[in-house]
Length: 231
Image (cartoon, rainbow, N blue to C red; front, side, top):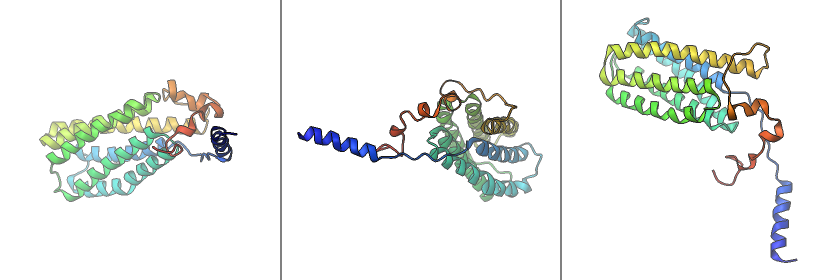
């Protein structure tokens, strides 16, 4: 037996004793989207004058203790479930809300910040990446795009100090909240196999988790991040 045969037998033996353990997890998107709704409604109420500037610290603290950790948890679950779209999208949104909350707590009430505006505009561009990659889940992609638009308009309001842009951002924030709650409910009903379903507009690769059997879904799992030798 030559060295080539020995090498092939060794690799075969290694594959035989290798086991890839998959941990069942729930869909993290409903959690992240519901947390998103809380944050965007709170800041929208400030931007629209429904809440006075004296309430800014209360809203900012609520976002820090509720939205940010819940979206961060959703991101961790998403990466653990080998879903880089959910993981990346929720992580970026969590970071942006943390940035907004801290900036609100450390700035004079009712003030604007051009620096914060630039950062928000950059974050809006960053949201394009997971949104485009989530094309198989149209509703989820729409929420991510909506988040990016909301951040962009808020960024313009911060950069220019314009009341009109701030009002527009507030209105868009309420629309985003409605979209996020719809998406959350749709994915929750889907997860529990409820007889009543809301269309979440899955298509293409987005249909695979519901259409394909386990063997087909696990095809190529050995080449997934965290399983293959290098990322």
